[in-house]
Amino acid sequence: MKKIITALLLFSSVSVARAQNFQLHYDMGKDRSYMTSTVETFKTDKWGSLFYFIDMDYNARGVKGVSLAYMEITRGIKFWENPFEIHVEYNGGLGANKDNTYFRINDAWLFGGNYTWHAANYSWVYTTQAMFKTIRGKNSSSFQLTQVWTVQFFKGKLTFDGFADFWREDNNFFVNAPSGTRTRFVFLTEPQLWYNFTNHFAMGNETEIASNFALHKGLKACPTVAVKWTF
Image (cartoon, rainbow, N blue to C red):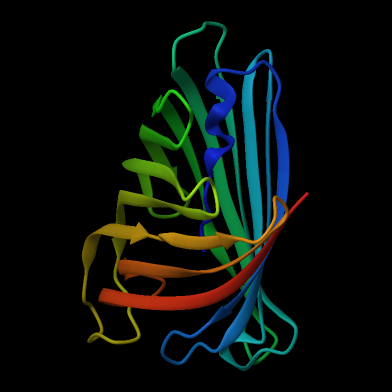
C-alpha cells in the first residue's frame, strides 16, 4: 500500500524541511478486514530531498501478527532553483503465508525525474514523475509514470491528497482468473481525505483503486478508515 508525499513537497521553496507521520488504517476491502500501519518521513537538504515509508499489514490472509512488510525509499537530487529534480527510488518487501513460508515482493529500482507545480500559498501542490523501472525476476526494462497531489480546503482543516501510478509489469498469476492469464500493465491510485483536528492529529479515509495489482486481475477498490499523527 503505497502512501503519499503530501504538502511536504514545499521543498521547492525552503532550504530545509523535515516531517514524519504515523498512520493506522483499517482495511474494509472484500476479504481483507485487517490493520495496516504506515510510517512516513520526508526531509530536504542542500542536495535535494529524501522520502521513505514502511507499511506493515497485520493478521492478513490468516497470518497472525505482521503478515507483510513493504517499503519505498526515494532520493531527489538537485543543485538548482527550478522545480525539476532527479529521482532515484527503491521498492521491496516480504510477506508471510499461513504455513509459515515467506514470499518476496519483487525488488524494483527506478530512475528518472519529477517536476512540481504549486499555488503561491501552497494550498495545492502537484508533482509528475517519469521513470525507467527494472523489476527483479520480471522486467529488466520497464517504466513508471506517477502523479502526486495535495489540495487544502477550509484553511487547512480538510486535506485531499493522493497519488496515481501506471507501470509496465508482466504478470501471469491471479487468484480470480484462469491459469495462464497474462497482463502487461498495472494501475494503482490511493486518494486520501483527511479532517485535521489539530496540526498533529487527523482522521480520514483512503481508497485503494487498482487494476492487475496484488494477484487480482482487473479493477478492484479497497477503502479504509484511518487516523494519522504528524510529529
